[in-house]
Length: 249
Image (tube, rainbow, N blue to C red; front, side, top):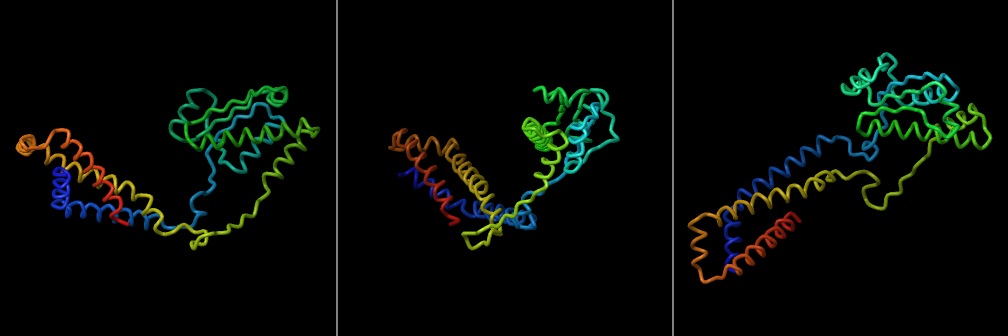
């Protein structure tokens, strides 16, 4: 318990600096909260168009429908040169586009023959993944309807009609927030980082003090075994961390 009491004594001595850092970190979290602005849950996600480039060499009903479908939801850049691998790499590197789609000649026939000659060249990230999923979902839906007996035009028309349907969602909130994100939400999101920083800072100061040569020699001369010292240090670290976690509440 001697080592544990020493930890508490040093923590009390450094309480002002630890409290100062606590105030600074909480103030930074509050500033971040204010900077977020809108706290509505609908502001978390907004559908946005991804810049893509398409080269359609097939000019079939399926390829034209795919291009038309992507133009409704994505930003298709038609003024970029994607004729060579070097130009494609350059456009992706400078983020002119996030995905390049190359539709070769004979794409429609090959696709319905259980082949997928479509070429997708993506820049790593969520934007290109979203485009890839959209292309795959469109083609798979058209293929299922076509294999069920519809023509390509009928299948495309049904897919576009289904995609344009909107669902009405009503949120039944079970808490007092009424379905809105609480104002203090971001504060509690950053609170664990604040507590970790405080614990690392204060424990670091105390361990540095105990590691000073004079204090270390004095402890080794004390009638306390080295095992008891280490056990007391472990209990002190765990107890101090627990107290700092419980302190804000």
